[in-house]
Image (cartoon, rainbow over all chains, first blue to last red; front, side, top):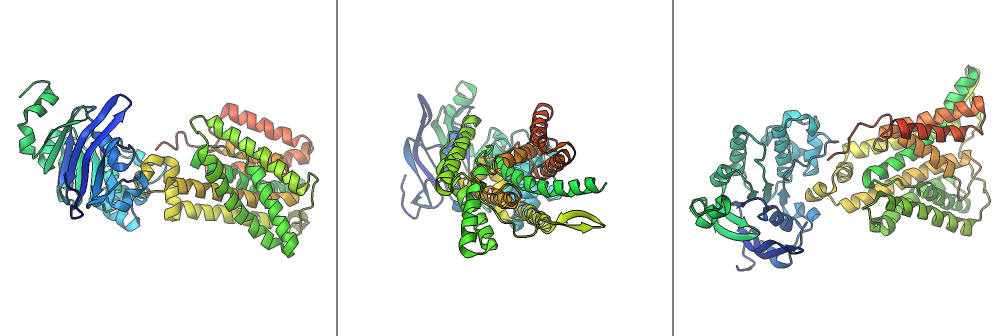
Length: 231
Length: 292
């Protein structure tokens, strides 16, 4: 892939990560252009969250590089917001000693926090502690916290986990409506196939397919990775 | 009854200082999960600097201001130069380093200023004026209440009304999540140590004139009382620290007044043991309040 300065969005070039003898990511490349929704899927242990952790600076790759709008990019976690990147976590990861509004304000300011809470339809719970809310509402608070920073790139790590059908439908609408670039790690195939422009499939850290949802759906390697047999 | 009232007001005045000092301990505990056993020695160090400045300038208030600023700088310095590099995989490591700091600070103070008690003037009279024919409060007591009250109000405003306070709380609750949200966790930790040391310095400046004076170990007994107050209120609870401080102050005053001053230190230790055995999370701490 090229690294011209005109190359917009986030681009990962040949990322490799080893944890001791384990090859967690093996020569992974990915491009997330402006406004695109890019899914990252794969069986458990495929390296999806490791890929997110590389982008966030929690994990340093042994080789490879990243660019953001064509410039070399190597974020430290606390600099992500400055680069316009926000991430949700697999768990809801909230500050239970703080109110919902305070939780979301940490990701932005009071004005953007209220806007995000309203967008995620949890503004009525602003004064409560996250622990007082049902799981689905807490997931919405988590999303609101990420949106409060008005990110250019929104990284969603299994946002549909533990949600019912209605909540997943609402989540799909939100992903489609957002102007941010979205990187989505998710196991819920219906959600991934319905919202993503492009999907990267990982298996044991190795990229086995990259394409549109239609292409991924009919890819034999993907079927084999998921079902243990060729489709 | 007159005696009881006098002892009550005296205990509240003393307890306000313990509350401020306990608050300093709680600030660091919440931010770094370390009981800063060096808090007392750090406060004495800044008090020495303050009284040196006061002697040189002839102004207690310049010295007082210098104490608070020196506390800020010393707290930030201790975090950036020492505590940041401590391996926190075991909670004992931070404790051992803090105890080492106590020995170093007290040794250095002894070398510079000597090991004899030096007089420390109070800015206001400590003679109690009468209310309804009973000597209850001195101007110095009112100064103590005002100073500690101002600290509590300012810290409350900081933590509940400002983005910086919000980020400090977030960094204390869940550092990794906070980093993802753009919070400079290291900077917040430094700020927490600085604020705690400044509050500790203020408490030192308030209590030292009421004790025997300046000495490298002048805050050792005060530290034990304040630590008891913090444990009593729950090390995670700022409000608990304030209430714990007032309770310990009252207890010490009543026991000193009715049973004798020599019994009071033992009573504090007995209270500490009872609280640790019966309510180790403190009387006011909510269970598992800090889970992220």
